[in-house]
Length: 166
Image (tube, rainbow, N blue to C red; front, top):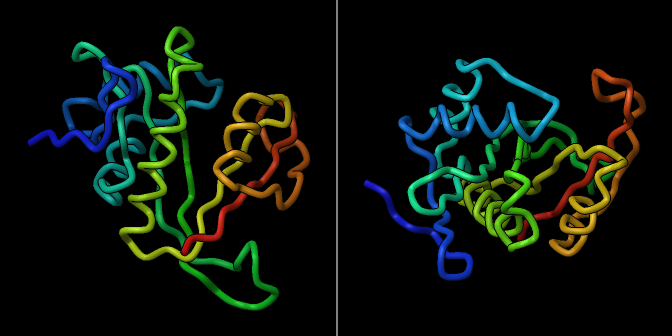
């Protein structure tokens, strides 16, 4: 059963991903990002954390997604401590739907899904050249914690950005 989590404008519906949405998500990943994953990887993330695997659709067509997972590791905020962290594995919106608030809505619902699982913080990696995404993450109160040298396959650096959750 589909439940709308939020609407963006009059047309976009933000909701949890379902099995039948996965091909659309994979198609967006292939079209919008240079990093690609196996079909099994998408399926496993959906099974692991459905609360934070969210899609955006317009007219029944998937145009964006976010998928997150839960990890345990050292905090990005505290000097000592092992914490439960949400990890934004991938987020993408098709070019023609960017700049309309869809990415922000996906991020907010991804964060909600991770909070539902009682994570202490959430983090992501973003290309240093992706200034639009970085600005959006900063508006959502993510902080740049470090620069990861040659993080991507093509050699580009990434920023590790994190948000402490209430």
